[in-house]
Image (cartoon, rainbow, N blue to C red; front, side, top):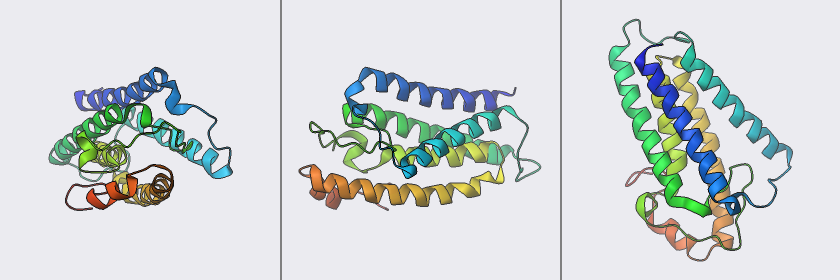
Length: 189
């Protein structure tokens, strides 16, 4: 296996390991049972399918290659992957016990507003980092599957709107936080 694919695979495994370790370190962040709605169950299945798919994709030859000489594309993809991984992991650490699984959608009674670090600039750096990570991964793998990232971004955008409505209703200061921060990209969006 070439070094780039090993790097991508290692980054994906690091991402997953951070989530699993922090989930166990802060069990209160996943307290309660996740919503058992069909939509929540479908979200979990899709999340696992995407993870398995991209893990497998790093192990096989190029899937739907974009370029026959992809070196520059791979370099750009590796940089984006690294940036997205760093943002998502740092943001996950900064969120600490205030994190919950996307399909659980829990807002705990002791939930606190996190408005420092990366969260000083953007409300959803984990989502943003993960989208940049995925786009970078697909570019580094020279895959046309990168065109699916904007579709996933639309789904994530809708999820953030739902989360923000719930947080505004239940978390003091969140509405003001929304007025002074960007959703995904500092100074842009």
